[in-house]
Image 1 (tube, one colour):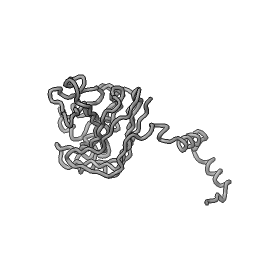
Image 2 (cartoon, helix red, strand yellow):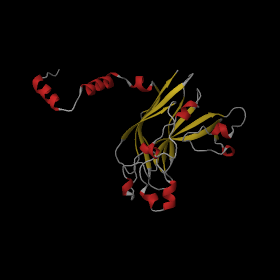
Image 3 (tube, helix red, strand yellow):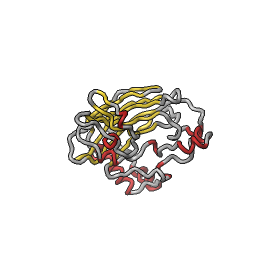
Image 4 (tube, helix red, strand yellow):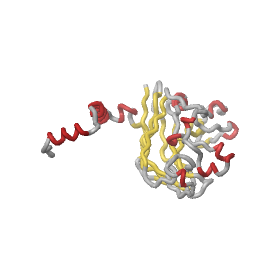
Length: 247
């Protein structure tokens, strides 16, 4: 047990500080509010370290629970991507970084062959050609969505909390607020490349449309990615918890 010896000294220090009563109340709320209250219960989790270099690997696979309306998905990650890089101005940013995590959506390949509408939900998913649908174990891949990029040439672990809320829309591509400021140093060497290279601010993007189109039982796969185009990129994950709120 610890005893406070001098209350007067503590109060004197508080009076000199910038801490307000609102700050104290906010801290009390944070201490008494559980992650379940904020993001919903955990529906999937992997707490084992894994790594991949210049390739891709499945880190976590899970199915969505029965729900009437899915309100949000939250991914709580501890991850890093290591690669030595000569583009020093990009270090510590999300520009020019080729270590990241994606979310794949898979559905049963029963009934009629999926069409283009079935294969792409919108948001920041990548358009897939219906004629080249990937079918494995009687399931087809609906699409792939960016979850989180790692920082460029950062060696330390970093925590990310990515929430895809059904009521939050992805920003329009024309808005500067969607992208990291400035051009990638590598892309800036070639103006044509620089025009095409754009990197999401914070390394992720809201994806409300994805959440709104999900169905109970859908299979989601969290994929670790390290670029095969640029050598040396590695993606490492220490853990990932997936939380959901639904009615």
